[in-house]
Amino acid sequence: MKNWRLFILMMIFLASCGEDEKPLIDTEYPEILVEDDSFPLQCSVIERGTTLEFKAYFSDNVELGSYSLDIHHNFDHHTHSTEVNSCNEDPIKTPVNPLLLIQTFTIPEGLTEYVGTAEIEIPADIDPGDYHFMIRLTDQEGWQTLQGLSIKIE
Image (tube, rainbow, N blue to C red; front, top):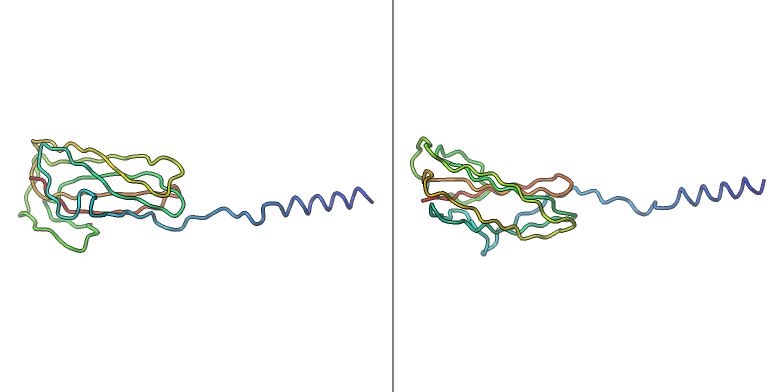
């Protein structure tokens, strides 16, 4: 009978261990913060044959994961920009040699804040005109935030 009581007490003790420690469930989107020293900004103009110095600030309530950059033409005036103000657009045209760039960057583990940077070569022989610069930020849970900027490449 004594062993039976000891067994029950041990089971109660083991069952109660860790009840207060619930895993944190991340239900919040990460944030892309475009500050005054970020680049590009909405309506930025970039010269062909130069290097674009990307910079943006990222944050998440639990842990950041990765970010990707996407530059593609907007010669057809499609929209998906997250900016309120619009830019002066060139007339609609057919692309001949447009820039298309998609790059993904891993953010070091365990960070809730990070400054994303990248050097992007803008070829001299691409079509000039209106482009979209898309920033996609993903946290470790898989939540994504998209920031779209309209830029012009001359």
